[in-house]
Image (cartoon, rainbow, N blue to C red; front, top):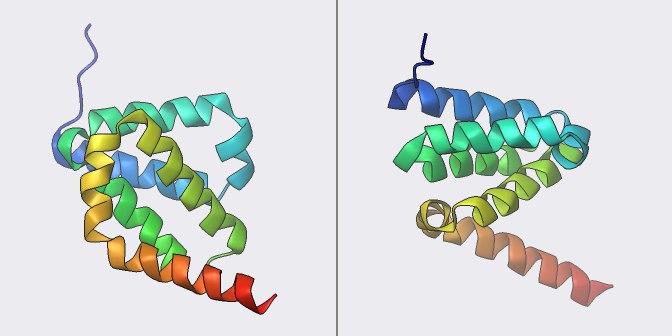
Length: 115
């Protein structure tokens, strides 16, 4: 029996779930090869919506004041890792969130100046 690929909506939901799971288990992001492989697999299955789905979830986590710093760092690591996997899809999604990322960079630069 051949395995059936999920539909676009199901694949996007699977990607969103995989990102949420990894972000809340930061050690798995860096150390568990199986978790990373699963993330890349569901990312590819999500097709054209992959970049937007992954980035939107990661940005929501990074913006959420309730999230732990380790979760925010894991979300940033996921974006970085996925950018290496398929930069074109994710780059298009990053453009939409550019204001957020430039704001983070400016705040970081201001903190460095104050040190």
